[in-house]
Length: 320
Image (cartoon, rainbow, N blue to C red; front, side, top):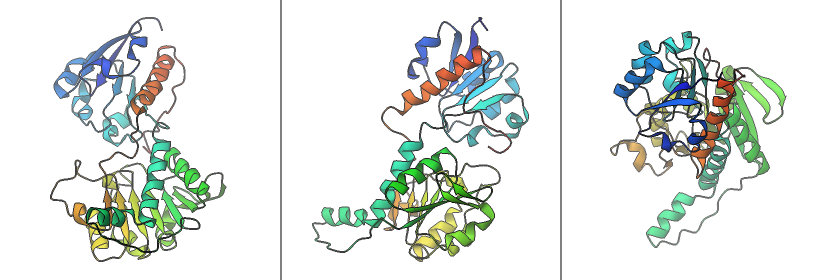
């Protein structure tokens, strides 16, 4: 393929926002679409689309205009924002930024677990109040962690935690023993039973129609009262009303929440004021240099696309 490919970059005002984009300018005719109006203007001629803002949802509204589109590179690990039925049913290839965020999210998981175990929120509060709050804290070694979601992010979490002597297992679509990262992977149907045997539950499963809201009151009731819940996946995976009740009545010991159904989290949300909750603004996967890493994945795939080679990080749209 030698002619220029018409590329739309959705979610940016200028192509200069994409690190390294200059290296493909001789092979691509680039349009930037920061909003729905410009997306509708440029999409009819687009052969490829780079979705730089993984939260953007305008593509579904513009989709009837996508007459020539053959490939979408999505700028995130999760592709729930574009898994609408029309795209799923189409022949358009969908790839993501899988692998870019794995290590950062694994480190963030470890940080949250250690913050709970070593009671760092109380230490910081006591410092602000000039209060000497001596107490004993937990050892990490030997604590059990159940990672719900055994994709590349979940696997990196397992590898990092096992180096700290946590006992880690996973939950996936089907059960298997002797997994190289988890040791044991439980089937999703066994989730509730597993929840009663673990100290930390880490939710990193993709958001799909099957997983939306699947973690609710029965799951929190199944957890130990001493257990903590960590959600780095999507807020919509969780029944937030049930989570609030579990936290308020101490059915579970605490929660580390990086994602929410409504983002930014409204100032009036009760999550902000719970002493047993650590709230962060959907930042667990972002690190200094992550945009460059995302761009590298796209640029590699662009070369593959224009030369008719197999793309990396190809999504099975039927399962998300």
